[in-house]
Image (tube, rainbow, N blue to C red):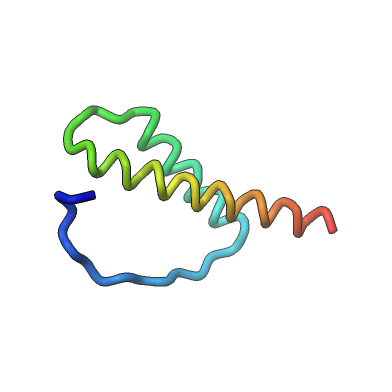
Length: 64
């Protein structure tokens, strides 16, 4: 992701419900992608993979 500026890293804490809402937002951003900087789209795709893993893990925890 060569064109993205170097930024600080942050950690956030959220509930499983919050993660599902965040997942919906990321999914919508990718589904309605208007074009533009491809690095931003790559970043969103990586973020989508991470949030999908979090939601899946939370779903498994709810079943136990």
